[in-house]
Length: 164
Image (cartoon, rainbow, N blue to C red; front, top):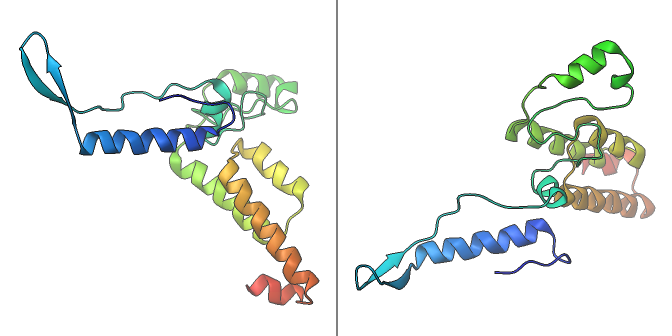
């Protein structure tokens, strides 16, 4: 299997997962020289290697340049937080752990915000505040924005658009 810088981490991981599932379902037969017989081999995924931007993308993290850059906990690395002694001390301690539930909640809040037609600046603030950024969610939010604009330009009222 090979990778490409032109293909997203999500697409590469999806292709790798599909390949592993198929290989597990239809095992590989190889010749074992020490036993002098054919043996069945089934691959198992033990680890996923990724560079920092890809790992950030796959974990819905805003990345190393974000205020909440850690993929394991909710540490606050914002310049505002680091201006006080308490903020600096909190930064040096382990933050509350990130979990699948907290990531999903943050992504769902972004989808709800985009369906409520908040500004792009507010969406950026949501991503920055939580440290959670996901390209698939961002694409869905963009679709919701576009749909809302189309409905509003077609003459629908704000109440009608919100009801949809």
